[in-house]
Length: 301
Image (cartoon, rainbow, N blue to C red):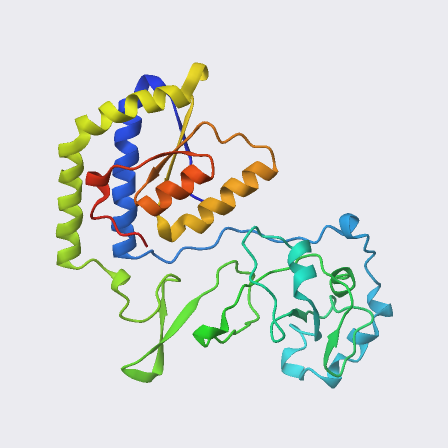
């Protein structure tokens, strides 16, 4: 979701100035390209009490006992088998907060790969077993790692036995040398992605936008001061958010999640860099600010 910052009225001018500078830096970063960063060490642990699951004893797991029928000796330390379960039910149990695409005839099940001690009791050792419920499919799991995959990008998954990592490394085929793959930041679509490093023209454009902001600073402050003061109210609290059309789905998801949990959003002032996001934010009940002169050269995506 978009970054949130808590600030106070006594430093309001500094708050508003830094917020707009942060917006410009955000788009400069999009041109430069995001460096590959490690994903947060997040583990989707199965809450056995919630699902009413009692793990089976390994001695009772006939699937594990006969796993040599499917998996070669070279992989027995990693995998004992595979199962499949309803995609819709799985995403309800392991809800990570993203809008879920509608299931189709060719995408309505989830594939689970099981380690030597995590295969379901009722699974078969001779293929990918269809398990009726998520609780049954994960009955022996203490940790579930979840990966979202779009095969329109012709992706392959490589699962490597190693010390535990929470980062998905991305390799892209080099079109100039088809036999070569190169490791790229996760936001890149190709080896020569324009986001990989700033071009001279992009640097000049960002500098131009920054000085354009400086020229408008007094005008912006005059407009924002009464708006910010009204939102802050008696407790002098203001939450600044920045968003464009490309991130609008995340904004919508955030507001809907906040409302479902009765989280008050009245202290939010959103800097919308385009009219689409500005109108969307208003329709969601947020206070939104858009300055046409300031954001005229800012990309929507």
